[in-house]
Length: 269
Image 1: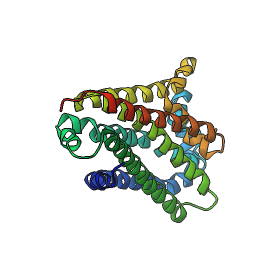
Image 2: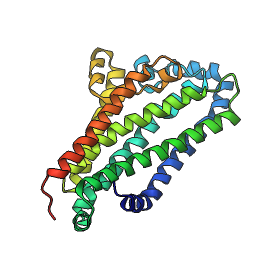
Image 3: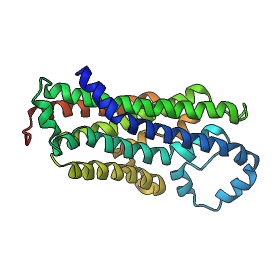
């Protein structure tokens, strides 16, 4: 890693990181504001969701909303969080490598004393730093809002909320890992974005279809999104250790392959 290059790239990307982090924190706070209203009208809400088919409720995580943990898992972490962080992971991974190659900036960097390995290691660290910052802001926003706005009996435990965010971080470390790998394979930014985005959308779609159509729920075994179940984490039913090991391993392996492949490949310099 090159510290001066890291500092420069963090300064360039900090506005994007803060934008995603602030947006995520605001959204989880707004969802928290809604919970007391829902809690006061739980009977009416239960009657309403009974009108929806069970597979759809299972896919959206709406099977039970009796506690804040179940509510925030379904209303944010089970849907909008996945979309927001999926967009961030793919977009930032492509910008950090493929965009530099596509626009000729990589040629300038390699003309200095910074090696290919240092460049890619630094870009991986920049991505991870952005991901950490977003999750810290999201965690702080949601937990602080819950402390002030949610009744003590309905509030979520610190460790449950931490694990929801921690496993989510590892999920998008894995998504960002294979997106960085794709970014390192392409000279064209648009093609890299299309492939990484397409794969991520396919994985997400497979997970949703597997939840809705129980006859083919086996397809969820082929997507990393199946390892992230915030509702089960909130209920202390998820195998957090196994999910963390698998997702972390995917991210690490993808990042190592990114380093090795980019170091060996021919570039249009």
